[in-house]
Length: 211
Image 1: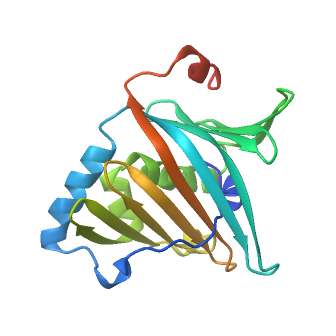
Image 2: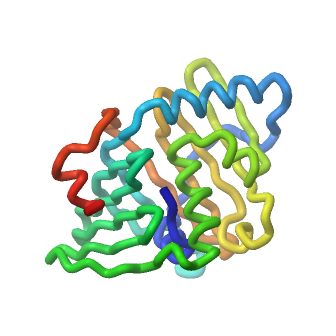
Image 3: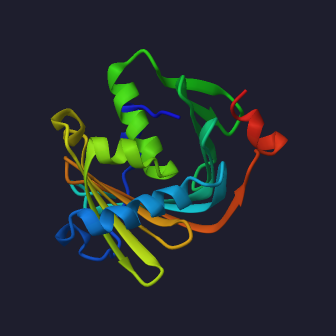
């Protein structure tokens, strides 16, 4: 599943408290724990629940909050169904990023012919699906685990990717609870997840987003 760089600007959220994970680069000992974590994260084909998105705009010194539901399918893609303040849905697959308005009108935001689309979509998919190999290949990885809570820090290795995002921070337990993306512009986006559930297959309604 892949996502566009164009969409990434829509995914920028506000600051939340993480452990100082960037003091703990991945080493021989923590690599085994990190790999075990990514295996657990990617075990279920479908992850879904509620999200709160907090978009922080540094130039305006303001935050914008939105709320909705999400579905992440390892085999199909992602759906971000915003319910407040304005209903809309964003569907991300390996072929395109599509915006669906409240009236049902579909607009293609980006298609897979763009090389930037291919690069960034692969990376973002790896973040949510826990793809160990892609994460290690594309990022300097930092990892801390305290009891049952884990923190992951990611710094892009590629300069073209750093032009969009300088670092990504994740916090979780049984599943990812928070994802913070820091933009090169100084803006940020934080996703907070709740009521997370797992399944092996999409429901018919969920599958309809990808058809």
